[in-house]
Length: 196
Image (cartoon, rainbow, N blue to C red; front, top):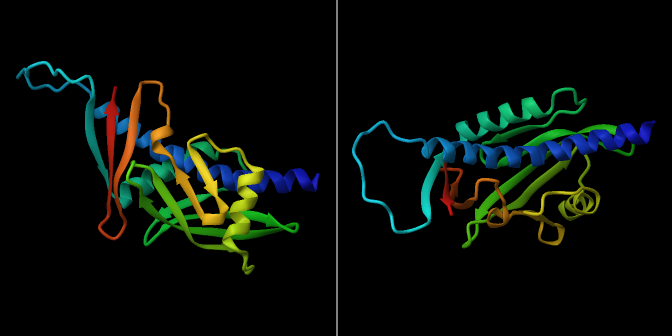
C-alpha cells in the first residue's frame, strides 16, 4: 500500500509539471484561435499567394502564471498531491515528493533559453528536495527513466536540461509553434504560430 501511495505522489508532482508545459502550449493555441477569428472590419484584402500564415503571440509573466494556475487547478482536482508554478526570476515548479518514505517539499528553478530553431531549453539552475542536496543530474535521470513524457519533451540529465521541442509538437489543426523570445527580466514571452 505504501509503495502505491509513494508512486502516486511523485507521479502527481511530475505530471503536474508536464501539465503546466501543455497548458502553456494550449494557451498559445487559444491565442492562435482568437487571432484567426474573422475581423468585423469590412475592408477586404487581396488573397495571399503564400499557403503559410504566421503570426506572433506575446505574453507576460502574469498571463503565463494565471494560465498555468488555471490549468493546474482544473487538472489536479481529486489528486492528493498538488503542484504550483510561478515565473519570477526563474521558471519555478513547486510540489511534494516522497523520498525514502518521507513527504518532502520540492522545488525546481529553471532558466529558459530559445534555440535557433524555435525550441526551448530549460536549464536546471537549482533543485531542492527538503533539506537534501541531491545532484540535478540524479533527479533528472530518475525522471527520464521513470516517467513517460510526450515525444516533443526530452529530458537530458547529463546536460542538466529539459528540451521542449516545439517544432515536434503536433496539433490537430495543423498549427506549428516556435519560441522567438523568452526574456524573464523584460517580462516578454514571444512565440510564432504558423498555419500550414
